[in-house]
Amino acid sequence: MALVAAFVILFPEIQLNAKGRAQSHETNSGAQAEELHLPASANDLVRQAIDNELKQTVGDEKYFFHVHKLSPTGEQTKEYVETDEGAVGRLIAVNGQSLTDDQRRKEDQHLQKLATDADAQRKHRKDQLEDEERTTKMLKAMPDAFIFKYDGEEESPQYGKLVRLQFKPNPNFNPPNRETQIYKGMEGTMLIDCAEKRMVKISGDLTQEVTFGWGIFGRLDKGGKFEVEQSKISPRRWETTMLKMKFTGRVLLFKKLNIDEKETTSDFRPAPAHLTLAEGINVLKQQTSQLAEGQSSASKTSSK
Image (cartoon, rainbow, N blue to C red; front, side):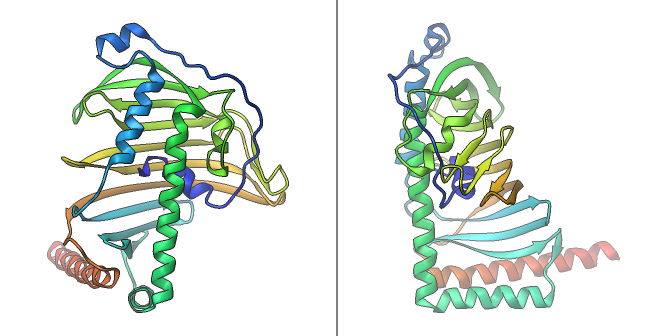
């Protein structure tokens, strides 16, 4: 479900401006669909893929993983663990270097507050739930927000045959909420795994300026780009493993908006099931301590 995380990150609280309503329309390529045993309508294939995204349940399957974020201000790497109360992360490196004593102390203080403060825990769960709800809204709207058409196929070493789709805004789409109004100015491509009907990659461009808050609070400039990749991390589960976005614009008419980020998620390893948030933080501290010790040992070995 994190495949549209770029927009969840970019537009958590803003209202975009869009107008227009008309009859729906779809484009498809019958020959390609028949050859690959896919629905004749490309939009129907997208609906199947999104249904599979929404039906995915994590259950007892929990993981540790790394998230590496690159932006003009530098690099950060965090170690995360999934718990029954949401994922929690700990900063482990800045600009490719281990944390200083002061950075480590501040990170430990932040996690200690989260482990012991009921209000902080409630806010943490509330924020993650709101992100999930926004993601669900955006996923459900995609088959109606865009006109999809088949555009060939690709071979993947990991997944085999992938079907490629092109999409452009559906002029008849009337966005039902603020999360989906950005779709009015976007077009791009999508790759779907033919066997499991799961989205593997989506990339798009803003082909027109998008205003939000009726143009009073800001805008996104034409030419913004995003790219998201998803990978199969277990027989039952897919997760976002790369997110890249670049947008410019203005907020409150005067303040410049400049987002240029790349986030990669990797090193998925099984984590204990049924952890509370506090238990997850303790396990996370143990994991990062072991990681730091391993890095220190490796550094001493290489210096000999």
